[in-house]
Image (cartoon, rainbow, N blue to C red; front, side, top):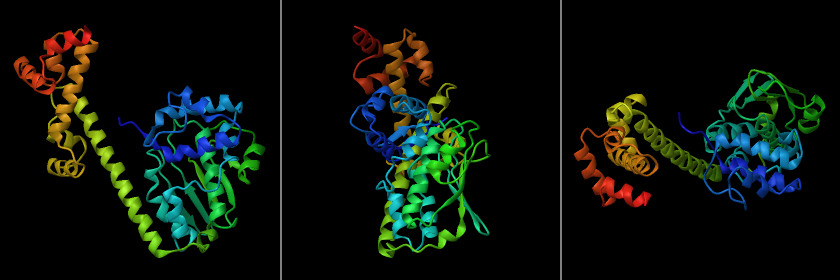
Length: 330
C-alpha cells in the first residue's frame, strides 16, 4: 500500500495559525520528529497527522484544536489553487478549475462539487483515519477563503462531518456561522448554489491560462513521483516471491508493459535501474543489520545463484558482500 502524503502547503497555514494563536509551532514540530523553524519543502507524511494534531492540541491546551486554529487562519495562503479562483470569470468557474488540482495539496482529499437546484454541496473525501481536527480546521479555512473570494456572499448552510463525536454544537456555530452535523456519510459543505455565479473582480484570462499551465506541470510531477514510488513498492513485494519483472509490475498496475516502460522513461528512470537500486539497498541493509547467511540474502534479493549475487554486489559497492559486512560491523 503506498504511503499517502499531504503537500506541506496544506500544513503551513496551520503553522501560521499556531503562531497567531500564541503557540510556538516549533514545539509541535519537534514533538513529531520534524526540525524547528517551519516545514521543509515537499510532501508531509499523512501518517504523521495523528501525532501532529495530538501535539498541537496539547501545546494549545485546546481539546477542539481544529476549530480553535480555524479562527486564527488568514483568508488567503498564497496557494496556486487560490490564484485559479481569482483569475477565473466567476466563483463557480474558479471552484471547478481548482477541483481539478486538489491532488496538489493532498493524496487524501477527493473533492467534488454537486449542484441540485438551489443547493450546492462541496464534498471533501477525507480519509476515515484522519484525525477530526484536520477536517474541522479545513472546513473553517474553506469557508473563510470562499467568503473572501465572494466579498462575503458565500454563507454555508451546513457543514457535515464523518466523525460522530466532536465539539458542542454552539462551538461549530460560532466558528462556521452555521450548524455542523456529525456522523454524516461524508465530509461536506452545503451552500446556496446562486453564489457560484458571483463574478470575480480579478478575472484575467491570460493569468488563468498561466496558472492552469503551472498547475498541470506540478500535477504531472506529483504523478511522476507517485508512479516511481508505486513501482518501487511492487518490486519489494514481488521480489519476495522471486519475481519483479517489468511484465509482473505492469500487470499489478493494470497497464501494458510497454506503457509502463514509456511512463518510466518520461519520469526519467528505467525499470532495471529501480530493480538494481532496490536490490543493492536491501542487500546492504541485510548485511549490516542482520546475521542472515549469504545464501538467504541471495534469495531475498532475487538472485538465483550466489556467484551472480557476488559479481553484482562487487560491481555496485566495489567490494564483496563478506568484505562489506566485516567492514561495516567492524
